[in-house]
Amino acid sequence: MTTRRLLLGAALGALALSGTAAAQDLKEFRIGYQKGGLLAVVKQQKTIEARFKTLGVDSVKWIEFQYGPPLLEALGVGSIDLGTVGDTPPIFAQAAGANVVYVAATPASESALIVPPASPIRSLADLKGKKVAFARGSSSHNLTVQILAKAGLTYADITPVYLTPADAAAAFARGSIDAWTIWDPYYAIAEKRQKARTLATTKDVDGSNSFYLANRDFAKRHPEALRAVIDELAKATQWADKNRDKLAAAISEVTGVELEAQQAAVNRARIAFGPVSDAVIAQQQAIADTFVKLGLIPRAITVRDAVWRPSGS
Image 1: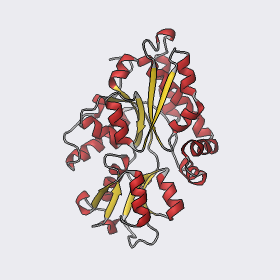
Image 2 (image 1 turned 90 degrees about the horizontal axis):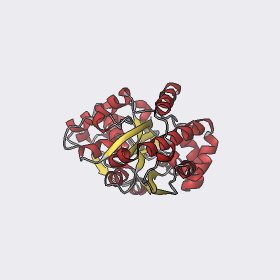
Image 3 (image 1 turned 135 degrees about the vertical axis):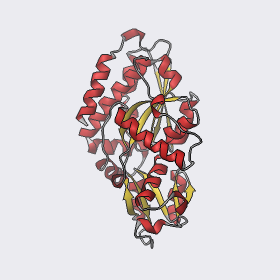
């Protein structure tokens, strides 16, 4: 964690802001965020607003999304300028030709494949032939694939049920699906409200990341403004890691998620922030290659082609 922060700090130091030229013609900065994430607290603390005022940008607009794919769709068409998602949405977006770039990485939220407490499913092998819900193109899609492989099963061994988190939560509560793959804080909420039983989590499979991404055209036009945002996000991440109780309380206040569930989510989260390194790119490429083999994305992609190069090279 410390190494990644130092690397990011060095990169930011080498790319210092140029003061009054930083914002140029930028009038409004638009951020997409999801329930329960760090950006919800950054929104509450207004640190980006304060930083942008020094650059002559008076308006920062925040747009909430339920999960990653719709956020990246908005990012690709330029309806927002920056957003954060899990590992899989950028892969689907790049395969579809979306106009987005990776700008920073952070550890993935804790996610899990869960079943109702009285479910007859006792092991991963028992998932064969069962209905497993997750959001198509989300990080839970990749986690499902990895968990199945760990159990010696294939994607064809289950009946995937593509549902948004809200719809999946309702289906899980009424028992119309057999299992659900989901991330925090929805995972923590299901544990608290439905006493969900966990079959596997992100800790049981290969490592993964979440990402901050920008609209590619925005990154080209306003690199200094983007660097300013990255700088503020790095500071916010350091604060969050050292103040988890305050972080949980703040997210709970902003999102309305009950504090007990939010505390569980925050306490098990890995909180860090860094560049999109070669190791991170390799992890993303492995996921993309798997999805091509499964026929889940229409073409092979090179993840590195979608990584922002701040120097403009």
